[in-house]
Image (cartoon, rainbow, N blue to C red; front, top):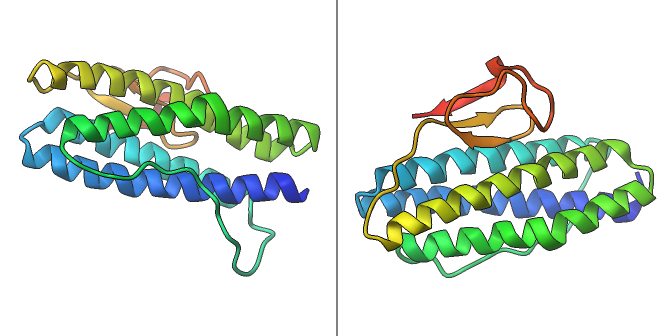
Length: 182
């Protein structure tokens, strides 16, 4: 694997791993604030980030040894309103800057499996941002958002509210590959 794509995978693994941990902590804070649907949302999206990290990690199976992961991460946890804003900022960075650049490098270097891993994550992060924005709007109004089941594809991490699709629009996995957070 070419070095730039390899380093981008390492960085993406680091970023997704940090997002996973942040969202678990954010879920706990939402529970304290009696925002059970926001807590469920954070846990579902944390799981999706876990899937993303795993997809990136699998692409690095050829490595052995320690490597530095340089990842953008948002810091400064607080109440749920602040945590939702931090989550939106992190997802926006991945959507607008990180994954588009990583995809182009992987394309240029003809690293198709890495490109696929980046594209799956990129497509999913757009949904995360949209759902977080909906939740923030409710929290800003003093309410826990009304959310149906949150579905996460176990193959690519695609996340949506409602019923699982027959086929994942990102990776093509069948409905049975979705986990519901209810």
